[in-house]
Length: 453
Image (cartoon, rainbow, N blue to C red):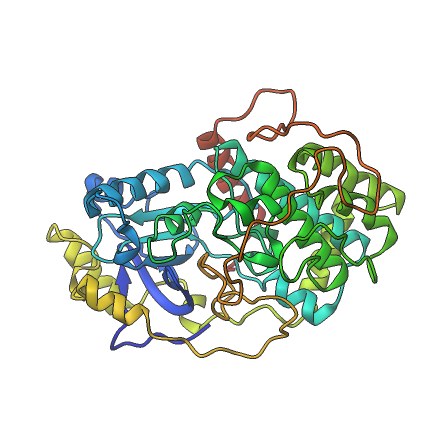
């Protein structure tokens, strides 16, 4: 977490006061921000900002605001930037339909801004990557709690016909309410970037050491089982403090050295090279609960053990003093409110960056910090980083060897391959509408916690 550069960083974006820089990647810069309590915000402004809650919340709302480079909205086709922004707005709406405590809620966005941005719930906690490198492999309780949380997150993402495609330890935050999966929403936007050239068949998108075999061959046309493979790679990392395939998946089995034997059967199924042989989310959930029962643990106790581990790790970042206050900077609040009263945008007093100049500003590097190099690191040392092409994960030089349809290369016998649909089954009951589920989740958060983050 870094201090703002007051000469280049905006003070306000939309209805958000910027407090610190969380990180930077190929898509842009991510800020820690606070939602401003503005009166008289015009309905058309609320609509333009895609705001999901009215102003005047009982507690300060901290957000991670991602500022997208304007150039990333342009593609190599004949489509205009206006059309690209319209697609981005549609993607923002789709992101807003994901309702889960395991995925940051979309708070607002402005695809039409000169500096397009989107705001998600801020998750105050270290990444799984940092925790494992600092604390070592997870015991049964924390391991199963992590797996169950990731199942919940992927279920919510898949239910709205989205895929993550870059699930990795650096994109999982261990927050005060448990694990949260970050950056599920920018994969489609990243794919449209002609500079990254990742829409071409045979070119990899994501992080090679957590990528499914089919994603290394064709990143654009993968389905839900690809995220299942990445889930297996993440759980393998949590069990062994290393990824199963540091240089990308191969037909060879990963080394099981150091992996607790009780973890191996499920991991072997998750890492099956044939997509249809990987278990569904419902099956994974059942096996993790069975693992807990085998060790006389409950889901609740497992979650508490994981929380205790994170709390004692010393890795929870310290919030800047401004983020701990109940109110925004008074002068900034007055200026933003005056702009709204005058019929302008809240951030109009701080406007002035031209898109091309802002691209140059976002290309400035944030200093790196030294971390273990066992696996490729996120693009910046932030707790919450944009999804980007990993600088150490180069495009795959050629198609990965395709496994036989009649055998899966694992250390354990597997059931015959079964097709896995894009929408992973949850249960036989009726599904809750996303909007209702999201409203219920916000009420749950409000009543379950008091005080600041």
